[in-house]
Length: 151
Image 1 (cartoon, rainbow, N blue to C red):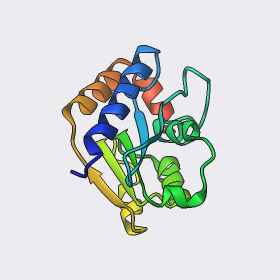
Image 2 (cartoon, rainbow, N blue to C red):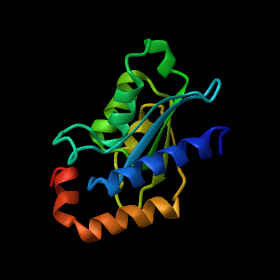
Image 3 (cartoon, helix red, strand yellow):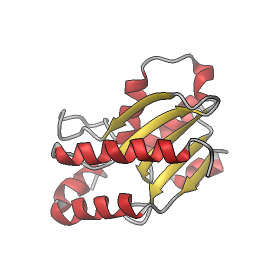
Image 4 (cartoon, rainbow, N blue to C red):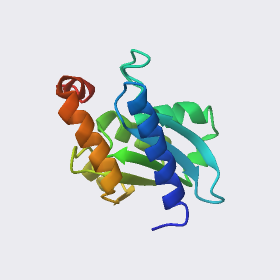
């Protein structure tokens, strides 16, 4: 585990918990500058709270980071409690984020292979807390989960 991984995943998990408490999809994200551990952005899936088609946990973290110079992303890690979907993986590639740490990918296996094929380091923690929270949501609200992943 890299130096800031525990911090990044804890922030992402807390965002997921907050999103779930708000009635949203419990996926959280966090963007950390790996040179000094600065948290640049954090966020949670806000599709239900804001009636948004694009505010997933990862994209919300990027949105909350604000406008950053392009070179900043090149030494960041994006943390997410769940394997990133195609849209979120696209944002990682668009900004050249070299590393993505995933809480779990048992509930949903996203575009990890695509990220790896494009040179992004992907680390999967298989965090039991992230898995339990997502599985609780999917069991309670399967129609909302299917909507979130485009089914």
